[in-house]
Image (cartoon, rainbow, N blue to C red):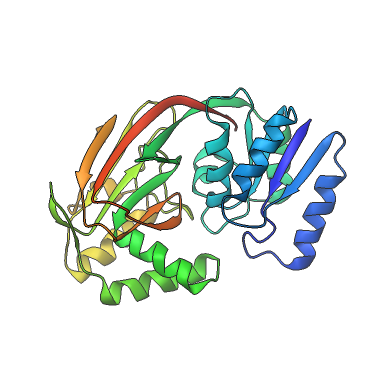
Length: 279
């Protein structure tokens, strides 16, 4: 049986469209629909679906919902289908999954199975990107606004620019941002690591150094033109694991979710071939 894990509050769809989506899913023979109600609820529902013998689990929501379901499916033989309904949809975009609900549903039901890598930030899994610095500040401001959508993300970016100060990593000194990428983008076609590959057993570490306002504007343009890796402020290296130290209590982001560092030591590792997904 196919199980759907649906976040009914994801994205910016109207109540009417959300109701229609649920109706379409519930009409699929031999399928079961679970609705999330709180943070981490998708993990609980995924485990229930596994216990009920699910043959495929399809996550419907943003990157946070995808992360919760994927984290629970690690090392299992149950494939993850993705129907993107979030603000960024980074993993779905990297995999080439359509953003249209109808097309994404068809892909999730009939698409090709592949195995991808996952990554671990201390004790938390991520599948797309994670990091500290400016991008984490934007994610924190975006979360505080309580409104979704690309326009609100752009607003949060400009608000962050006004007050942002570089973060100091003990091993590197001051940085504008520091991102670890498994996939090639944050979402919304913002390509933080254009050459990242979900199946190569490697992570890209993108260090962006502080620069002038003009340099940072050009950096933003490069981000959406898939040329960030060519910018003079950017250094990228490929690793299987890394450790660094940063101030406890600063924000960090993990697959779009805004979090706060609980200690000053961070260890990140790649976990190759650990998640079965529908592409």
